[in-house]
Image (cartoon, rainbow, N blue to C red):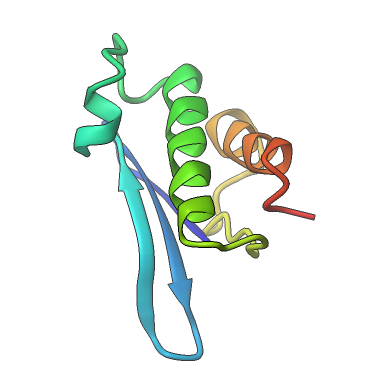
Length: 93
């Protein structure tokens, strides 16, 4: 599972390294996220909602555990909230 942050948006991907393909992806630009009607797509609240949406999609695909790759970002703020939310949904150890 990979995290990417741009100046205005957040992106989460589940990548199957063995097959070299993306299994699941969500971003703050996606339809599921925009339906939540949040004020901003780049704050901590948005990161939590995005992680919850990602967890729901993974559970629909019967994926129970992922490895978290923070892509070199420091473990604080939005990245930390994403990881903690995935732990709450029992996807991270």
